[in-house]
Image (cartoon, rainbow, N blue to C red; front, top):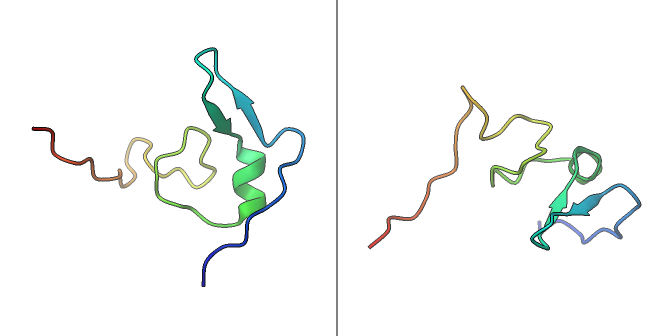
Length: 60
């Protein structure tokens, strides 16, 4: 079953100086599960040292 879209709440994200939207730990916890994309603020630690890292497509 696909996850239902959520309405963004204050504190769910911030914009980097380059204009990218970054989801915060608050958002991920409300979402309730890990997407295994190596998110910057993953509360489950995916992609951090000692944790599984997402596969990267081969270049070339």
